[in-house]
Amino acid sequence: MQKILVVDDVEVNRELLRYILEDDYIIEMAADGEEAMQKLQGSLNETSAILLDLQMPKVDGFAMIEALRERGWMQRFPVLVISGEYSIDVETRCLELGVSDFIHKPFGSSVVKNRIKNAMDLFFTRNRLERKVEEQAEALKEQYEIIQIQSEKLRQEKSFNRLMMEYRSAIMEVETRLKVLNEEFSQEFNRNPFEAIKSRLKSPASIFEKLERKGYPVTLESIRENLTDVAGLRVICSFPDDIYRLADLLTKQDDIVIVREKDYIRNPKSNGYRSLHFILSVPIFLSNEKKYMNAEVQFRTIAMDFWASLEHKLKYKKDVDSADEIVGMLKDCADSIEALDYQMQEIRNKIDRSRQ
Image (cartoon, rainbow, N blue to C red):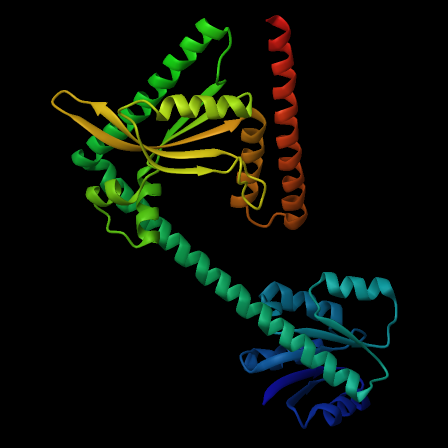
């Protein structure tokens, strides 16, 4: 049976609470805060809850709460105030100090039992969850440290650095071809098919983490075979039809191979995300050989790129208030962006036709 410490200077109250609770709990009693603290020192680990009166001689309820807080004992068991005080200010003060509940005198048997049971259930459930979160945080910390150690080992491997050089070369190859197309459009049509190119090379830590998460071996061959997004480029265009025109011109070049294509513009994700994705196998020309490397290429409009940066922050930021509401707002924005992109495209087309 769980032990409850009843602290009240009125003997009748202590005995009444003993009578109500003794079938379900072991009852320990104290006449004031000083006596209660002395008893707690000898039975701290066995105590499951405290019922505490506020108005007592020597050490009153508020002083005892402060003493419990200073020792960190408020984290060990729930404290329920038992009082004839009906002031909202007093209740608020108690709750702010960490008291779990407030039971008013005179006592009703069923009310006392239910409030104690609920307070204990909530308190110990919360503590279990907090311990689990701490354990998971510690496990994640250990995993992160392992990833950092392993990624540093990768970084120091000469063969790994050469592989990263080859992926960087694939990025430069795609960038060069896009820039050539951009230059040609500028001369032929007096406009540019894209506004910017953003590129990134996956970090050693990110490569190691993804291989581990997917259950792949951490080897150079495994990186080549199993990861298609080590080299990544994002091409930002003004209008949707520029995306398709530019992507078509790039992928139809006779030495570029489409490994995979996903069209999230015509078939948006459920959250509203729109982009045209390719995994391309791109030739790179080294001093003694020509070889093909994978590169992930994404085409987005300017507005959708801005939207995606916000959505990314929400996805990877924890404890965001009103997350569901924000998700809904982002979906509405994505739909509005699509309509705006096509409206702006139509305006541009009308301007171009008027010049002919």
